[in-house]
Amino acid sequence: MPHPFLNDAQNLLTKAQQTCAVISTLEALEQFRIAFLGRKGELSFLSDRFVTLSLDEKRTFGKEFQEIKQALDLLYEHKKLQLEQATTGSAPTHQFDVTQE
Image (cartoon, rainbow, N blue to C red; front, top):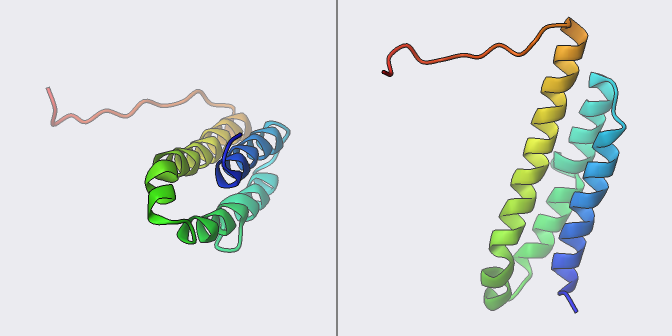
């Protein structure tokens, strides 16, 4: 049986993915950002719980917690880019560094 913290982290990611999938405006995306990534958001609440774990539990679940945080950030950024492109009707522009060969 998975640890309750890990179970809650996975549920948070699933909930965020389902919520993000139906977002169709930048305003709704901002509400998503506040609800999941904001200072009083769900990730912050989970982070507060992470702090209370024992040292052994932190070692065990730390990597998974960081992966959840990164997944939520990427989910937000990808949706933002998608909505901005839909709003402007433009294809993504690829930037490159001319100083690199």
